[in-house]
Length: 208
Image (cartoon, rainbow, N blue to C red; front, side, top):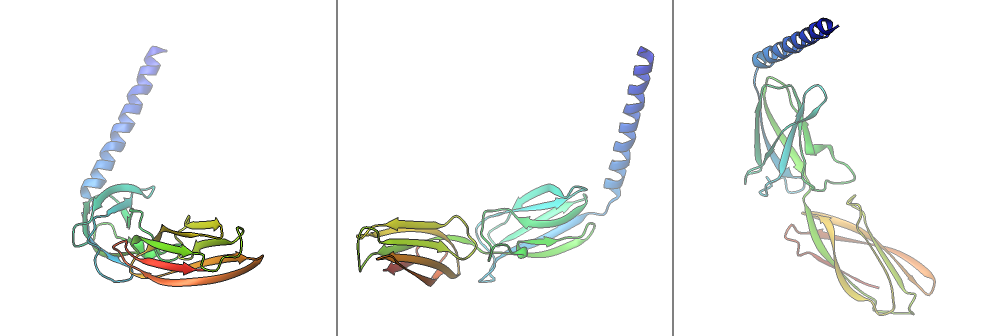
């Protein structure tokens, strides 16, 4: 019985060693893959100066096999002998609409790849709200974003509302927000368009 268990362990070790040697052989013999890329702002088409993370996906399960950060010119570089499939940005930057495929690019194993990635940069902006024509304490305003940012929402009751608050928007492009107002039981819906700067200083005003 003991001899049989020992024999099984020896066989398993030999199989593991053989598989490791084969894997090493194919990895060592595989031609090197190089990837040079640049991450651009989706709207200005200029390289993003701020450092952001890019990951390389590959392997048999298309998993994350490496990560790098872009330099001040928006560039990134990978070198590997592993099987690769694509690169993508991982930072919490928002992209146009609910989903935009331009923040990743497919790459070829064993080749020299040049890729371009595009993302919409996130920026904060401020909204000033003032109830300039109050009716009663049940006056109501509700604001929602339309650029697929998600989670941005504001609502308030009151006849003397005069406040400011910040929300997330997409920089270097026109942002769209809808707002509903209820006064004296009557609901009206309006939409505002305004350009959001990357420096987090943009302001929009709503008087209702």
